[in-house]
Image: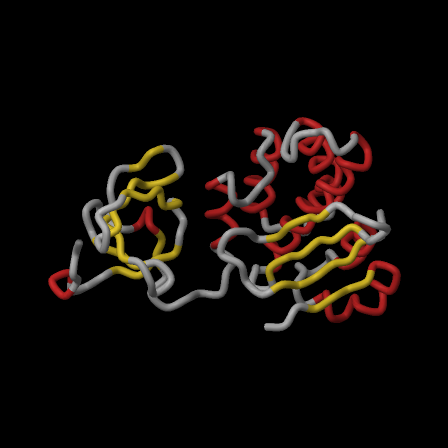
Length: 221
């Protein structure tokens, strides 16, 4: 999917297009959020390593934010608020702050408050998001409970499995590529062995995988 660009100056003209990525009733609040600074918003093709990102302006350019196009509306909105919070935190507190430090956490809570007050999110997402905000996380990737709750609203996929659903010792494949044997859990990740080279890797608990039904057909190192 090609990236789509939304210029903050003319964002009202793009609101109908942007609307398909957002939860019902969030349009006005989202447009107000985007008008807080000169932002270049891009809807990006899906990325495996991140849901969105923020780039500080250089040489007179605009602030740049990109959000993955394949996110469900609630995940899209939370990711957008997350990235705008980076922008506002850097503007208000300076570039020397930690990316997800106290200043960013405070800013995220302030920006998220109007959306929570407007009942944009279903109760389970709202409650989990509030808990995440109070813990100082406010990121769907670092807070597994928020990530799980948001994933409930994804379009159902055939054979949808995550690493944490795979039995210990079973083989699974990620992205139709490398094959791993599931090992013990260490915090948010599982220690898994790549059957091709015998090396150990830490795999995220919520990584989407496919079970290998016929392990005898797999060649190990």
